[in-house]
Structures are given as structure tokens and as C-alpha cells.
Length: 188
Image (cartoon, rainbow, N blue to C red; front, side, top):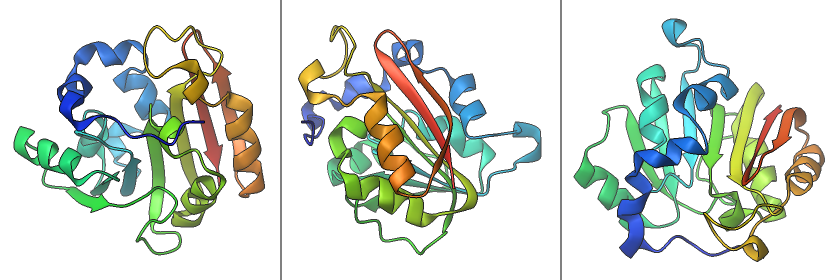
């Protein structure tokens, strides 16, 4: 199930504003527990950042943002498109992050969990988030219709993320399946 990567030749699709129909800017920021005027989150990581579409959403509210993707070509497209000065690039698998323990206040992934949903990935995200920090996952629901995103056979269900998060020592504080997607918010 899953474990593929997005085709770099189609990367321009990742910058399409219609992606906000699956997750809005406001919802993403609220799940990260942002109070934008107070700049409460200092260090964040976007896991599976691609061309930085959602990274750009959170960057104005953080001191440091790590755009993490397994494909360096995605980073190159993001750099070419232009990125905020507080964004640093890391080319790595979600299950093997070159970050210290508790290095992040928060991490999130948007529509990429199906690409790295191996058990060790959630453990790794839990390792790099500090106590009280959040691990936020938006992805394509296995129960979806498959009209957008990857085929349903390449998706995980929300129960998979809840179970893996619990096993990694994270507490689920929000879990919701929608028509085509799901959201999971966990706290360490």
C-alpha cells in the first residue's frame, strides 16, 4: 500500500490554489495551534513538502521551517518558484529525519502520508517533536471515492494513523474522515 512518490514531471500541479478545497489555509493553521499574531510556534517541519505550497502557508508564522521531501527535485522547483528566507531544505525519508530529538514545535504533512505511512515514520515524527508539540496529518482517505489524489488502494485509513500514533506515544486530539480526505491531529 502506498510508498510511491509524486511524479516530479507533474509538480506544477502542486501549486494549484484549488488544493485549498481539501484543506484551507485557516484549517491548517488552526490544527497547528497557531495564534498568528503571537507567533507561538517557532520551529516547524513540513513532511513531504513538495514544491512548498503549504510550507508557504505556515512560513510567515514561524521562525524556522524545514521543508522536508525525499525528492531533491521538488526542492529545486520550490527554490525556482521562490521561497521565504526562513525555509530550510532537507532531503530525507520521513522515517529517517536528520533532526535532533525534540527539535520541532510541530510538524505536519498534507496529502503525503500515503507516500510514507510506514510504522517507523510516525515514530520518527514523534521523536523529533518536543513534548506538547503536535503532529498533524491531512491525507487522502482510503474510504474516499478516488476522484482526486492517488487510487484508493494506495491510501491509508484514519484508523491506521490513530493506531500508529498511539503506539508512538502520541495522543489523538482530533480525528475526522471527510468525503475524500482525513485529518488527524496528535499531541506528544
